[in-house]
Image 1 (tube, rainbow, N blue to C red):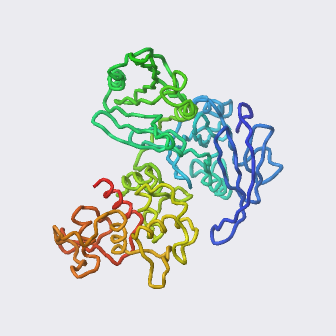
Image 2 (cartoon, helix red, strand yellow):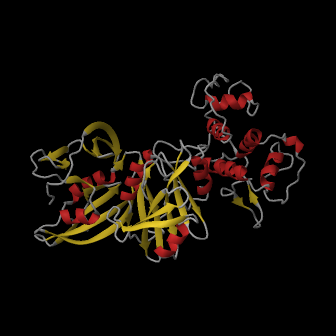
Image 3 (spheres, helix red, strand yellow):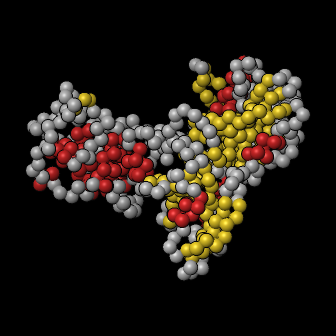
Length: 508
């Protein structure tokens, strides 16, 4: 079904791993492909083969004698979605429609543009999935489009489905999906994405953590025409210099508008796109050497703009800013994202934060010390019998030297021990607050927690945090009346709760 021209050849490397599946161990291979600057991978059964057909077609097949692969992957660089769609049409295949879907793969969410074609011989429909990354579009085999089991039999379809779902980009980029405004783009994840809203617009920025400079913006001007958006983008000392048609990534009706600064004659370019009743505005690449962004950023901006695509997906979906398990509807999303951008918290290798995980003493100490921006701590180590030169040693030893933490009676710190809410409140206070707790003579503003006694050793710490609305109360057990609850001070505290309290203290 797939033609053989206008496609680049993959670099291929294979590695073995054991996958626990359906109660048994199945040996699988990992296929690592390279398309321009974008790396990706699939896993496939060990009794299948990674194949190239001629010089241009790649994929996986159960037999070395197969004339074409059961699962194929083709890459197209610098081509629009329309061009890729047209590539597959011929006398036997007729394009029917596009169907968009958001798929949560293991590393990130991606928009799958499913191109539905009719096979004229069988008079049945099947789908190909198009995934966009920068100026790259990957076209892949899709599991059976309908329950009619075409083009695969049931057993083959399960294998195709497993290969399809194993897909991952491993290129240092990540996908940003704006579900409300129905567009997506991809950007290098080494840059910081921050989102703010004003009365006029919603603005998302990419900041280079090394230079601290914002080099790319995408803004949504709600209910504004292009002409109205131009007036809002243009500064008081600028005038419009030129206005031309511009197609980025095949997006139609986009315009490139260049403004010139009347003071220094420097030019800045933007892309304006009407989108329903709104106007979207994107930073364009430099119009002249080194202005307004470093030349280093220019290639990134080109890739980001080329990755832009619009989609139409119904239903509910919640995007995420940094961690795929901290979506925009998560109650602690603002806190966790803020602290992640500030390098106070970090996630795991699978791009998750683990908000519901119980925090260890080592993790808590690191979070707190990082929130103080302490600088180089490499000299701090070997401060407890069980804290030598581990990843947490600099933070634990720095905190110990400042008398913020102590060990147990046996002299050990026990870094992997989880910590309860009462203990966490004490440590958070000791690290982040200068005054001694004894210097505060406060009473609770409201008698809220029914499981907190004034005779408890942690009562003063609880009072300090409760009176200033610094506690995360998403985990509480509601009391008999609406204004009472159980704080569960002996319960183990979660990573999300600590993040919320640190965040509120930084804003306090």
